[in-house]
Length: 300
Ligand SMILES: O=P(O)(O)OC[C@H]1O[C@@H](O)[C@H](O)[C@@H](O)[C@@H]1O
Image (cartoon, rainbow, N blue to C red; front, top):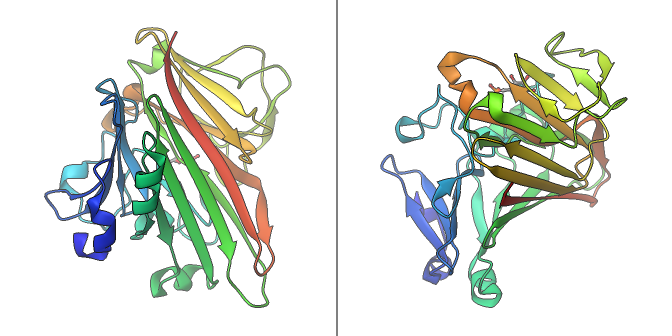
């Protein structure tokens, strides 16, 4: 699949184009300090790995094996896209972006000019497959930038239609690696009076509930959409002694999901997803929407 990548992009040392043993192409960002690296699969436009000081920050779900995937199912782990629909609805669960091939549209310039912050921009355009579910002309651009201890993402959705608007919901369905779910708290969610939709009770029509006070810890199957999420969250792991900061712009909600299921190895990850769910984004012809999310790995 590497032949899809323009040869002018192949010169960068910090932005490498590689292929796994099944032939799936990925972009390998390597920080010049040697401290961090990230891998972004073109299948699903998914950041499957981000390592800082050799430690993996992201997680793969136990019921999914990246090394034996065949492209028939989305990658369950890393940072999958939910687009143009979050969750169940008129089209398949979480839309189609996570099932499709994205293409590289910028890399060379950024890696040459940005030095210590290699980045890549990948793009998703409609195909026959997507049009069957959502017959709209759109362009999605996703830029991933690697810094020494931070990973930055910028998602841009453009309505390319001449006269029709469209509406979408979306999320970055991040899976974070944890020592054990019992050792984890999410700071920024769970303050008294904060509203959330409880998808455990009803995934299609979740009732709205009010949080009790305190940082959020998970003790059983949890599937919640926190409304009006603050622009900064922290996933604190007391055993690892780590705190992962999630900073966001224009992502109004945060989904917290853990199925508490052994076959998914769910004690080893937590999903904290930046999302737009309750109020879909409507774009008029020519309009665009951008949202940013940064992850910073730090110590407690
Ligand atoms: O198994 P999937 O399709 O990747 O979805 C996993 C979970 O993703 C979460 O975002 C949803 O809130 C859950 O309801 C869902 O079960």
